[in-house]
Structures are given as structure tokens and as C-alpha cells.
Length: 93
Image 1 (cartoon, rainbow, N blue to C red):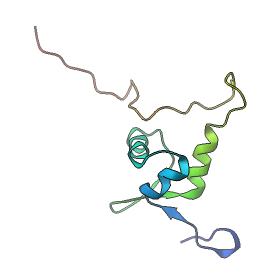
Image 2 (tube, one colour):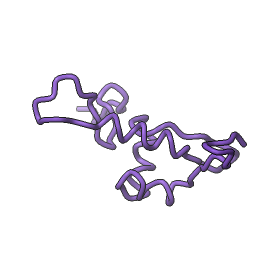
Image 3 (cartoon, one colour):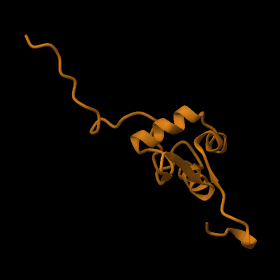
């Protein structure tokens, strides 16, 4: 494991621990991960880990100074992108 400031071990968080850091519930963070709209994560076996620095960087992407901030990055909601969503196939007529 790499070291953080002053030689302290770098902290990685599981989804339930990371969710309160970003102000979301664990399920919403899972959805963001599924749709590719959330913070970076590390997958080790079946475990998903978040680096605390990556969580703070993702939060910083949403920083605004006003509602008309043109330079701010768009923080997408936790839902599939239209381009990624499968097409609906209805009943044949």
C-alpha cells in the first residue's frame, strides 16, 4: 500500500464508507459506478474500493460559483446515458 502524508497508509473505503463522504447513499454510488458517472474506483477480486483522494476530486468537479457557471463540469445523474441505453424493442405489429 502506498503512503499518504507523513508516512500514514493511504486510506481506501468500501462503498458503504465512501457514500457518506460524497453525500450519497450507497445504492446511488453503486449506480454511478455502473453507469460510469461516478468517482474512480479500484476493483480487487469482488471488492470495490475508493481512494479518498479520488472521492474528493469527484466532489470538486461539481464545484460552482453561480448557477450560470459556464466553465463548470457537468455532473451527470446516476442513470444510463441515452447512447448507452439499450433500444426498446416493442411487440411486432
